Length: 53
Image (tube, one colour):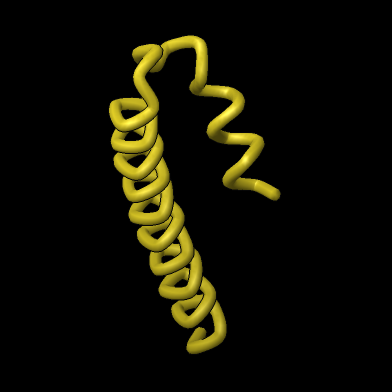
């Protein structure tokens, strides 16, 4: 569901051929996943630090 919404969001910026569109989506989702992962890591670290005090 989320992936579909994201791909619909980025569709106007993609080239008309579907392979380029697919590559763009994969790159965007990969970066988004990395960003989320880092965000969750930093959040969990700060939570652990808060619990130790």
